Image (tube, rainbow, N blue to C red; front, side, top):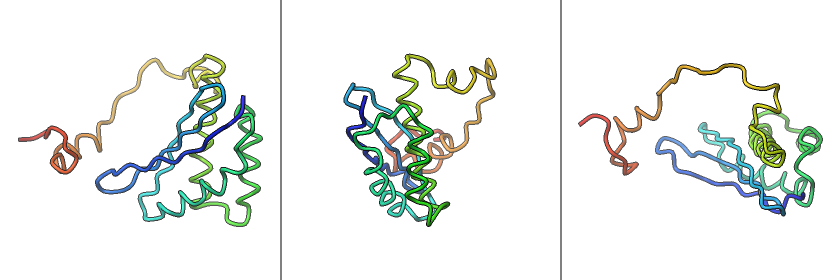
Length: 143
């Protein structure tokens, strides 16, 4: 299995830009990650993703820790900030690919499930629907 494409996906989140990463393989498995920077470094994160793409293309996505180390070495002069945000999004997508290739849920790669259920925090979703539903073209929560 080889990585064939690393694609950043930019989404308007009304109050900020959301950045997702889509990594495709030659076996048809696609992994997704997220590395948003709402503090105003959107283009820095996107540029870093493009810089890291050369480390990934043509490589097997399954040795995730090795690829992480390769990306970290490339960014060693500026570790932290946008470099680690980009690496984190790519790393998440690589783990997603590995789990899909093995046919297991991602949590199985980290020792199995920890809980049977969790309480849901419904923060931004409700806030967006209450305050900016018109801009997002979604139904209002409060009329």
